[in-house]
Image (cartoon, rainbow, N blue to C red; front, side):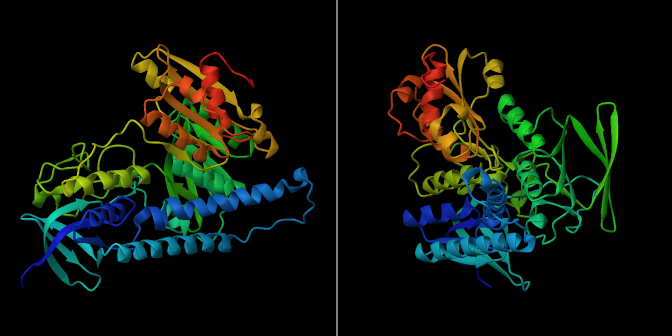
Length: 465
């Protein structure tokens, strides 16, 4: 059978893949997208979006518990856990359907099946019925994403011991949960379950939770989480993780201390692994390094007409990073490359309460790089809007260059931190200086005033603190 001919194929429809497909179509290419599961990938179906639905439920539960503080008398609020999970699945389904609509709107052909790349610009796609069709393409953008990293020798059954994926569709609220790993995924799930009454223990091998974040911000978050009843053990390791019936047991080693733990659920949240196996990279001659595809600033592999984006290339494994890489790759594939990918200005967000958001350098990184810097810090208890809405907890911390005042990093701990960080991203992308931000009139009363105040503090000119 002759190969079917296609112009540009995108392999994977996550936040990198579907964005790349749309941008390439906008630039005049005939685009086909290959997806083996649901459109939208892990982010829309099993990650970013459904988890935020759960976190919103946890926040609402917390807010209702504070009703008396705002002058309302309510009866006891009860949790319907299956309904909470059910709504998150409905949200995921709605957004996956939205991606389907976008594909039709932008005239992108959707091909269902598992794609395997071969030499000679060929892609073999096997559908659910075992039928394989071979496509000849001019260009391909590989966007196959990542999957949860497991622990060697430990079987994840999806009933008692989970990854983020199985836990997102688990309709039974555990009584006692062990979370292994305190990155963004681990902390978000830990916050969600603790907020709804589950006993939660978090174990992190490194010295702090959210290891990539500023130490002061991470410590501030840990203090709040512990105050709310979460048990957190840093510099610790989990050993002898075993499932027996509906019970999970483990040994937690922290320095010279050994603790036996038992409960009814566990989450392994120790990172993700790029999906670069079983997609034919070797046959196509595409190089990988520790499982990641090697690319240049325009997302080009060393094989002409082959691009790679998202969690399968180096850099932070974040949806918004993948989406921007998708645009860069699509434009490069269409001969419209404007700028290479910039990795120094990618915001990082954790959506527990309070939230954590950051961009740029931490104090530790500044010291490692020998950069002389100044720090500006403002607690949200000094911001009128934060007090008015009952959210004075947290702080904003900015780092600026000691000589010219260029903004080096911004780190926020607050209930709305993830909505505030975009201003910092704009400042950083334009190599903004603290004085310019300080002199920009911010509306009052808003939480955004905290950015202006922190810049003023870094310059030694704070007004409200």
